[in-house]
Every structure is written in C-alpha cells, then in structure tokens.
Length: 100
Figure 1: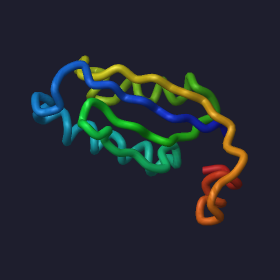
Figure 2: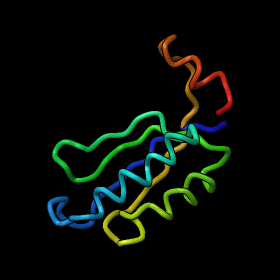
Figure 3: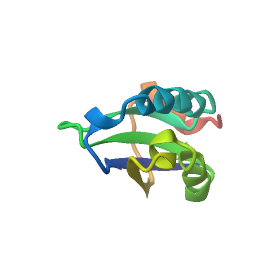
C-alpha cells in the first residue's frame, strides 16, 4: 500500500460551493469506508484542504478523486504527493501495518 498527501486547492471562494459541499462530504464517506482516507480537513485560511490517504497506486487514488463533486463541478484541483512513512505513533499501527 502506498501513502499520499492529497492537496486540494479551490478554484473559487469556498462560500460559493453551495450544495457541492454536502455532495463532496457524502462522496468522501466512501473513501473512508474503503480505508483509503485516514483523515481530512480544510486549510486555514479556507483555500483548499488536505487528506492523508493510501492506495495501491497514485492512479487508483486519482481515479477515486476524479469522481469527487469538487472535481466534477470544476471547483478544485487535486495534487497527489506520495511519501514513505518510516515512523508513526503506535495508535496508527493498524493503518500502516494492515491492508484495508
């Protein structure tokens, strides 16, 4: 399993996203259920968001986020940064040591 930071940069003010926010959050639930997303949250100030995620490949992760409402509605750009975790808090052992 490969690990990634997903950087989401909004293309317009967040306040204009309207119903896309609820659709985006509902879509992310699938990523959490599939074990792809560990955590996510908005940047401060709210110009985008960050995810810590895992997948078999960057392409698998990109394919998942290709269907995110923020992407399909042209509201945000996504960047996938692969990293190799070498140390982590013991509470995260399951995330790094077991397959989803």
